[in-house]
Structure formats: C-alpha cells, structure tokens
Length: 293
Ligand SMILES: Cc1cc2nc3c(=O)[nH]c(=O)nc-3n(C[C@H](O)[C@H](O)[C@H](O)COP(=O)(O)OP(=O)(O)OC[C@H]3O[C@@H](n4cnc5c(N)ncnc54)[C@H](O)[C@@H]3O)c2cc1C
Figure 1 (cartoon, rainbow, N blue to C red):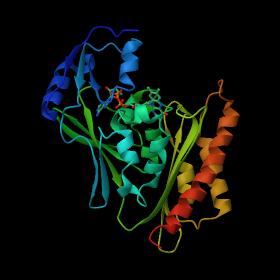
Figure 2: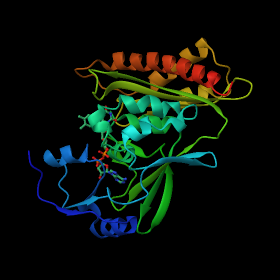
Figure 3: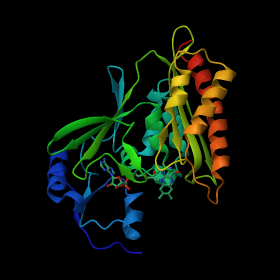
Figure 4: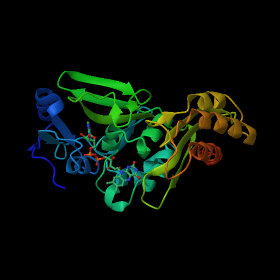
C-alpha cells in the first residue's frame, strides 16, 4: 500500500521543528525512526498533510547522567539503549527490555521516544518507563513542560502529548551508589514479536537490605501500559522474601485488564503476569543484592 500524499520537512533545529508543528497542529506528524509511523501511513490509518522529520536535529539522542538522573534523548535508538553499559547496576530493566524489542532491523532504526509517544499497549518501553518512574520532557514553541510517565499513557495509541509538542528527553531518577536491580520478562508468540504479556520490574534496596522502592509496569494486558501501584506499595519498606513476591505478584495480576484473544484467555494472561512478576522480583532483588556488595 502507498501512503496518501504528504509534504515533507526536515528542519535543522528543534526551534524550527517546533515552529512548524505550532503552525500545522493536528495536520503534522513527527517522524523519528518511522518503524511505527510509516506502516500507519501505508495503511492510511494516519493521513497527515505534513511529515516533520526530526532525524537531522542535533542533541536529541544519547544516554548520559547528571546529579542522580539518567537522561535519554528521545531519538536514541533501541540498539543504543541496549548498548548503554553505563546503565548496568543502575537501570538493569532497560538493558533487559531493549534486546527483546522486535529484531535487530527494527532496533537499529526505531527510537525509544517514538515508542513512548506511539503508546502501543503491546509496546515494551511504556511498561519500563512506568516501573522506573520516568519523566518526559516535552517541548513546544510555547515552552517546556515535564510530566511523569504515570498518567502519560491514556489509551491505545493515546498519550498526554499535544500535536505541537516534541518529546525531547526521558529523565529517570537513578542516584549513583544505590543498590538497584531490574528485570523484563516477555512472552511472545515467536522471537521478534510484540508481547503477549510482559512485565517490567525495578527495585531499590536500602542499606538494611529492605526494599525501599519497587516499580512494576505491565505490557499488553490493558488499553495501555499499566503501573501496578498496589503491588508496588505492598513491597515498599519490606524485607525481600518468597511470600512477599507472591503477594505482590497477586496484586499485579489483579491490576491487569487483558482481553481474551487468539493468544490466550484473559485468565491465562493474568496468571502469566503473576508468574512473571514473581520471577521478575526474585531476579531484580538478586541483581540488587549483587550490586555494590
Ligand atoms: C515488525 C515490527 C515489530 C515490532 N516489534 C516491537 C516490539 O516487540 N516491541 C516494541 O515495543 N515495539 C515494537 N515495534 C515498534 C518499534 O519499536 C518502533 O520503533 C517504535 O514503536 C516507534 O519508534 P520510531 O522511532 O520508529 O517512531 P516513529 O514510527 O517515527 O513514530 C511513532 C509515533 O511517535 C511520534 N513521535 C516519534 N518521535 C517523537 C518525538 N520525539 N516527539 C513527539 N512525537 C514523536 C510520531 O509522530 C508517531 O506518531 C515493532 C515494529 C515493527 C515494524
């Protein structure tokens, strides 16, 4: 299928891109890696009159950290997150999720920001962002605002971003020296596929070995990625134990809202969430106990 006709603009600066988006509003679409947008154009599910390619704008990609915050440029490709070894021991859940996204062809081109804004309920990054309490830096010609991942995902392919905004940076709290661990468990029909069910887990341990903070995000079991808040609350301040993981996993499964489909019944998918969260917590805590000890 061929897309409907559109105009194409490749601004050299972010300010230029924001001015164009401000002028065209809903009629324009940002293009990053194109791995989701181009199929949508070809299927004519999206028919913008203008494509604004942000591929030539400097400063939108890369991973760095400052003052206990990891910053990931929105145009950072999945494979560059996968290769960001400085995240090891700080944000293991990102390193665990990245290689499970599709296949190397997609990971070499698709971007973390494009995935977040695309907000596919089966997309992997949304759950990870919810688990690590990421914040999204959104710029428009009117200025900048920073919003939490929690609340950003509003429905299938629907987020809190406005048509005139560009996601520039993802910010993740990550105090250096903290004992953290993470895991991403994904069930897929075959290698390279979208998730049937996936779970993201991030834990921070205190000096006394208790869990000071736990983040749990769910993929493909609701209209958007879900933050399992009751399960997170049940873990905070507690000593890690098999019984605690089982109770948190039960609460996470209760937060899932899957549909029955050709890949499994809703009951089955909820049970996969339970099993994955239990495993995910065990793996994440083990990693955190190994870190800095
Ligand atoms: C065969 C196949 C398999 C896939 N498997 C998986 C998988 O297993 N897991 C998974 O998570 N994903 C998967 N994907 C999706 C893939 O990860 C995409 O790369 C990703 O969803 C979108 O990133 P992109 O950079 O290609 O964005 P684009 O396609 O360029 O854009 C996607 C959307 O985000 C908007 N956008 C992009 N960047 C910005 C920005 N900085 N600010 C504002 N708006 C922006 C665009 O306007 C568009 O609406 C798969 C895709 C394909 C084609």
